[in-house]
Length: 289
Length: 269
Image (cartoon, each protein chain N blue to C red):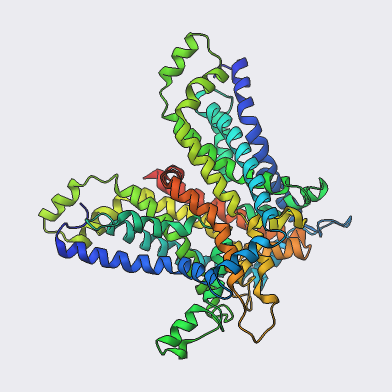
């Protein structure tokens, strides 16, 4: 490449964004990496080098492992439920049904309201004494199932997953909806002439051809899972009995509330590594095909 | 059509979709209903509107949203323009580094940013929200603008160059007028993400006067009420509806741009 004055000048356009990204991404990543080798509370003068101690602690820390397990479970269940529901909605709307726009608005609307609103609505629905869910169960004479939904370690995580699936299925739906418009309709007709029914068509034409959409949703879903914080913080704060603890809530608790900056940074670095590794693998696998 | 056109299939599709739509609208309907009962619609909403901090918090959210939109728009347009139409040194390296910002969950970086803000004493400033939220959205906005600008034909630019136009002139007179639709998408999404944000203020704001509107429900919390009685959920839920109202209006009038943003942002990773 021939370097000249204009190549240098053109960088000036990138610089302001790049400085922003450096301050809020690269500097913090370097920082958490650096202090993960120390024992430090974030403010005091005492900062002692402990080598890999924090990492050793992480892998035997029952809370961290519990959080990791919760998050893997959360990722698998929510991502696939959203994909299944979103794809079903998108396919069903490619028919001659009426009021298509109404369905579209209803399915997507939860995605644009604040997570605060979502968290508080579901908090109320699941309430043991005044919640709509228990009220409904009573109405249909299933009192036996009545339950402090978010207060029970066995149900809390799954109940919050439902809220997440409710909020994000519309997002999967929109992407599948856009993906379906790219598929040539003639394919369906010729398959039908060959005697295929709707399930055959979905399995052997629609699902394979929507691969770019599946990949996009998987990547966004994984990053979304690692980002999840607000809904947990606003409802259960990780409880009861750590049953809804996430790495993110643990970082907040350890780093900001308990001033364990170096250990919190070690957990945070794990989140960053998981995010980078998983997304890179998927992008690579996708572009190889 | 993917789904058969016969009457039976259409009716079955309609029934399944309606069932799903009822389930999906229930939480919103529950929110609206609770905001109307108790002491009644008018009293619930009046209690929220009369509260000392309500207008303050709405104002804070507006200020933060306005400056976040301004920063995101300006910086990401300049960067996307350079990456798409100019020839900066190490162009691909810069682009890939910017994309890392899309992959890293911001919540993992709160400790260093917290300590940084502590050092620069930003806990009592709108900047404590504006800066991190902008940083989180900029990579996403750059990607949207760059993908869009890549589709603007280079002939137009070459022609202008022959006439002696500089890069800023070309950006102003050729690129920007052709990019209005993607600008609307970015403005709306930046507004939505900023308005809806809860945790940035939780992490970095230590001044009650500066809190955004998403923190308003805390002040109508039923947890503070005497146990035993049925709590009065009305004002709390009226507050949730008021927070969502601007979002509902934006969606109602600009639905197409919001949906375009989703598909444009995800289609190219």
